[in-house]
Length: 205
Image (cartoon, rainbow, N blue to C red; front, side, top):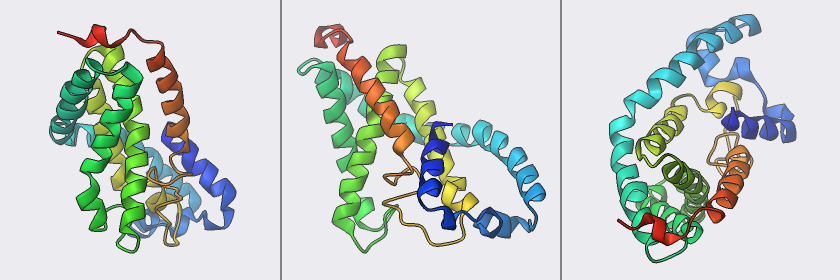
């Protein structure tokens, strides 16, 4: 639901781009009426929510074990919890720089801006994941969260709800400023909670 908040905001700002029946999803599915579209969506979304995260668990475990399971606790032993969350998230974002510069997610026209946008995205998502890790004391919760997030790429809002080319820096997908606004507010709440958590000594083994 948080992911859909950003898409709703995007289409509120750009209502002329809302075209579900002209979307890639509708065209590839051969759907031509709104009732057919909604029926297919109602079937597809629950399956995607259940299956997509499972498919990405192994891949996401590697990342989350490294960033949240190892780096974040190590940084907490030197810095405050909120600072460690920010630092580990920024490092995580920079780790994506090579593939982003090659055009993944944001295209090849603005590689530097794409890297910057990815760092901001990872800062937002990493803050949420750091909170989940500390709250549950388990790396598996961030793993499932990460896998669910990656699973949304298969049927992103731009694929489901619009026929025009999308601007990845704006939305409606999560990597855009408007598309990710729901997660931005969630990250702010998580960061406030991180600020109220015990200091770095609680992370020491």
